[in-house]
Each structure stands twice: as structure tokens, then as C-alpha cells.
Image (cartoon, rainbow, N blue to C red; front, side, top):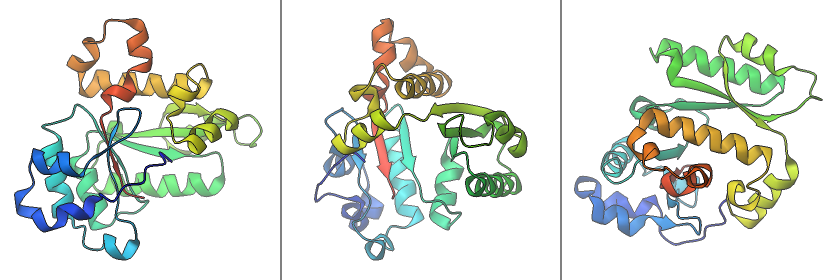
Amino acid sequence: MMNITDSKTMLDAVPYLRQIDQELINNIVVEHSSGVHTILAPPSPQEAEVVTPDLVRSLVSVMQTMYDVIVIDTRPSFDELNLALFDAADMLLLVVTMDMTSIKDARQFIEVTELLGYPPERVRLVLNRMNTFSGIPASEIGESLRRPLWAKIPDEPGPVLRSINEGVPVVQTAGDSKVADELNRMAREILTEISPDTMSASVDGRQQRSGFVRRLKVALRND
């Protein structure tokens, strides 16, 4: 989605499992034009097999000393790697769309997190592509999953497709869109909860509106 092509990936850290430090992180991150620092996933599933939970734990542990916010895009599973990430996360954003298959998958995910002992407030429901034509009201989705919808991202195909095709965050390509408004609201709320000092440092209203791209400095890609 970010149209990043680079030879550096998470695989470059594998030989240095016991030596991961800030210098190594700086050597493997790729900086997007928006300012976001990204660690790319291995180029193929076969190569990804050498990426162990211990490696990812070590990477995240060091990155926590370098960045205010770390966003990790995970696979939809409860494998050992994901469980390690879930355990370390301050917040889990569970994305659901307005179709029965997605709602069923979300219900199963929530049930597993309950068995794992994660507190309900740690798992936030994000309704993606919210619309009025799916036949399932947004309110019923929250009721069905017995959780409030923490965020509702509207269905705006134009700005989103342009963002994907250009590889630039929608908050930059279409800052006045409803999608961008909701993403900025989500970012402000997250920053207020987990990094209040960073949020309070932004006293200019315009900076608060668009500044989440600058402050969400690491995206750990795992797709």
C-alpha cells in the first residue's frame, strides 16, 4: 500500500538476534516519503519462516526506546508470532467490515482474546468501509459482537484508491475527506492514551490535525 520497494527487510536482522540495538534498527528501517519509518516483511512466505517470535520481540523491545508509537500490521491468526505481538501490545485494533463473514471472524477473534485473558478495553473494534447499503446497520454489528465500535471509517472509494495507487497516506492525499477525519481522530485518541506527552507537545491545531503521520514513526509490515 505504501509502494515501498527496497532490498532491506526484517531478514537482515536474523543473523543478529542476540545483538539487536538501535544502530541495527536504523540500518534496516526504510523511510517513507511521509516520514513514517517502516520495517518490511520478508519478500516471500518461505523466507518468513526464519522470522521467529524471539526476533520480533527483540526488535520491538529496542524500537520502544526509539519511537513514541509502533504500529504492527499482522496476519489474521493466533500463531506463536502473533501471540507474542498481542501480548506486548498496548492496544489491538480489530478491523471488521459490514458482511457476515467478517463479523463471524471478528466474533471468533474476540472469543479467543477473552480466553487469553485480554481485558475488553484492550481490543478495539474498527468498522471499515461503513455504509448505508450493506443491509446490516452499524449499531447491530456492535451489539452482535457485544463490544462498542471504537471507530467507524466511512466508505469513500475515491480517496482511498488514490491513496493506495500513489502509495501516500490518505490523510495527505485527501486531508479533507471523511476517511482522513476519522483516521486523524483515531490517531489523536491513541496518542492521548499511550503517549500523552507527545500529544500535548502539539499545541498548534493544524499540527494536531495532520501530525499523526509524523508521530506514528514505525510501521512494522507483516503482510
